[in-house]
Amino acid sequence: MKKISTTNAPAAIGPYSQGMVINNILFTSGQIPLNPATGEVVGQNITEQTEQVMKNLGAILEEAGSSYQKTVKTLCFLADMNDFAAFNEVYAKYFTEKPARSCVAVKDLPKGVLCEVEVIASVE
Image 1 (cartoon, rainbow, N blue to C red):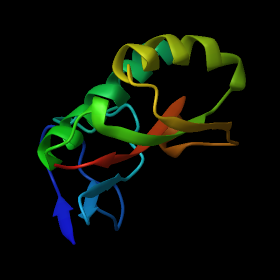
Image 2 (image 1 turned 60 degrees about the vertical axis):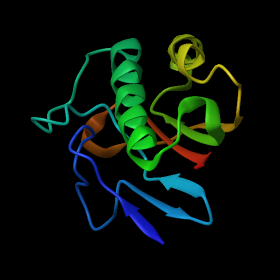
Image 3 (image 1 turned 180 degrees about the horizontal axis):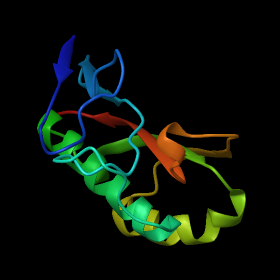
Image 4 (image 1 turned 135 degrees about the horizontal axis):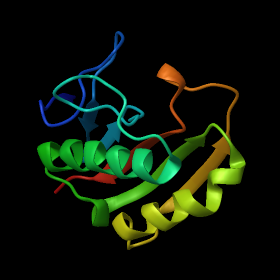
C-alpha cells in the first residue's frame, strides 16, 4: 500500500490519510470544502463548496497519478438533498466520464459543510 499526501489538498483533520493506493486503485478519504493553506471552509453555498471539494479531489488524484477521467466510483454526501441539482451541475464539469456513484443526504458533515465526496480511481 502507498499513502497519498499532498499540500495541495487539506491535511487530514483526524487519524486518516488523504488517500491510499493498492493494486493500482486509489481510495480517497472524503473531501470537504476546506482551503488547503488555511484549513478554513470555502464557500457559503453548495456551488462554491462543491467547486472547492472538486479542487481538493483533483489535487489528490494528481498526486496519486490518476485523474477525474480515471475515476471508477464516487461517494457523495449532501447535508440537504434540495442541493442535489446544483451539486450535480458542478460535479458534471469534473466527472465527464460519468463514473458509478452513490449520493445520499446525511444528518451532519464535518465543520457544518454542505457536501463531501470521496473517490475510487484507477492509477496507471
